[in-house]
Length: 181
Image 1 (cartoon, rainbow, N blue to C red):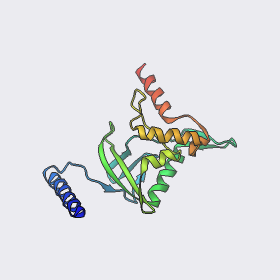
Image 2 (cartoon, rainbow, N blue to C red):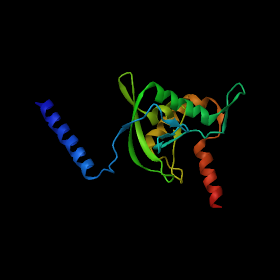
Image 3 (cartoon, helix red, strand yellow):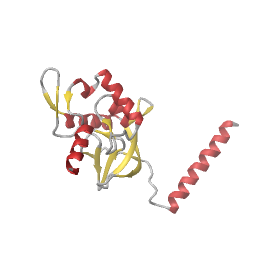
Image 4 (tube, one colour):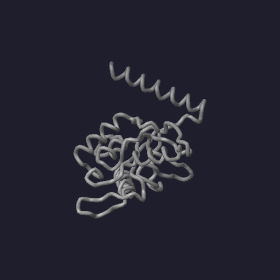
């Protein structure tokens, strides 16, 4: 009996969503990330004529360096990019558009199917230390769950936290202050 109620509720939800989309074609719907998408940074990619960015996630900036414990310098942004690429390559990723950035990029939240489980892409990148919690211009985390994942990765010295680097959020915030002056 409970199952029948769930089926009816699910049908009503789907019918409602379909009706809403029929009324307003601008209502965003989930989409699968194409394997031909062009990755630009560790949080942004282009697919055909659309630019997408993970909401609440800040990757390392390309062209900034991270110094490993042995003194070897690596491109911090390329390292973030490589980990996004590995995740997109190894999993089916579906995203939900949620808004637009100032540069007209579509903000998305994404889930990846790995070993029969769905994981949040932002959490996966941040928890492994290859991306960071984005903040507002005032320095407040956009997603507090991502901030918790970042703090845990930092404590474990996971990923880029095992290197010396300039935190991309701090770098961007300081650049914003310089522009205001």
